[in-house]
Amino acid sequence: MRESVIYQDILEEGKREEALVMIMRLLRRRLVTVEPELEQQIRRLSITQLENLGEALLDFSSPADLVTWLQANNC
Image (tube, rainbow, N blue to C red; front, side):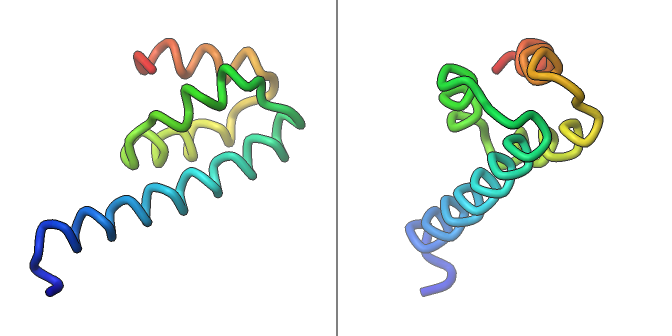
């Protein structure tokens, strides 16, 4: 069962959802609020993009930094 494509897809989606929850928590802690439009963009990110955002957000000091990152990464 572990080798099945469906199982792997479910596992991958679970990992992406966990990453998304953590990134949103960190962004809210760092920026206090995240505009709904930006949150929708973030929700569409792949797991790799979420991981990259997780690293980048450590340097964010304002919501503009998030907007800039999303634009620079074609999100």
